[in-house]
Image 1 (cartoon, rainbow, N blue to C red):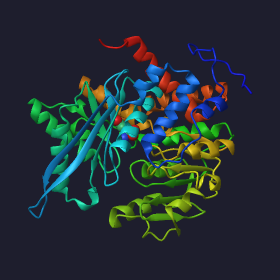
Image 2: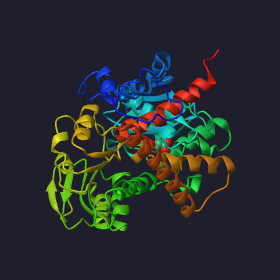
Image 3: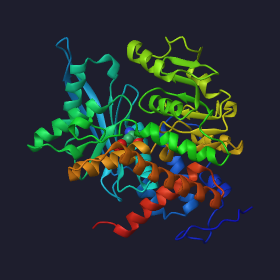
Image 4: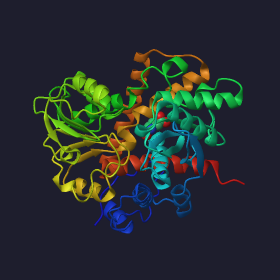
Length: 444
Ligand code: GLU
């Protein structure tokens, strides 16, 4: 069987497999909870489809650099605890590597590898001049005091200072880290240089060289992408029923902006559980509740639901914005939302992807949907390098233009190749990175 396809410019045409053949050759998906296995499987499918040179495929499978550090931190009780951290640079063919730093008790080298690889594709898909990287520290920030967090962050920053820098690798916030974390990293790095280097990290507070609009950027990008995705079904944000898993910097901000745009956010959840209200939840009240109690579940404004239950609600749009492996082969058939916009990185396994695609669920993948954050990180880096700062309206408008354009590029590819949005996004991202690598050639 073959699918009639118009080939994008520059793609090789001989013996090119159809999508089903490419999937077959990539092997049937082994349901894995290891995000790196899943990222490699996604790459395999894109590589098969692109008929990528095997040598190039091999290069892209491997992170270029991986640094593991073990470092001591003095605890409040006077004891010393050794923590483990990572910084992985997946690829730098298109520019300095870029990506967040995650503080989580569950992180490990394979998670960081996967997240770094996804950053490479993400930056290429939105066409900003960065490669991909990610960092992580195995710790539970909720159990650390503010000064312990500062000591941990400064020592980790010092340990990875041999691989980061404003022209080499630029960290940003991710799960468990925030603008304050970035301020400490910027300060620590600057101390070793003898002068302030704001462009070494993004997602900093505005007062120390951060960008207007960076804090809300990922959530704002999610709303732009949702607007583009529902437009085709003749829907509009007004009255749209949305369920959001996660209430942090991605889910929480998206919830607020969805509500501001007139959508009905009927369900949200945090790590402790979720709330459902068919008439729409009061997002501002939930935010106050979270600030006060550390969780939204103590707010009485809706029925209590489980975080997994939230995924199966009958809504117009589902936004998984918590963590990896939430939509798997186990629950994919029970997802009722016709549209999924991935706020988190890696919330859907490859096996679940296939099941959703077969059922006609329209999924906008992480590497496109949540790219608003890194796009504004790019703007922050540019502003820092120029010491010239923009107004928030300008930041938001420029980000919107990039997101809408990337959405349309991916949508066009998906239609032309008759593939799902994840593969379409990966075809664009992987090809851009492979082309840059080919042009640069292999050193020496
Ligand atoms: N951690 C975010 C992401 O996964 C942002 C990365 C950045 O701004 O560098 O995209």
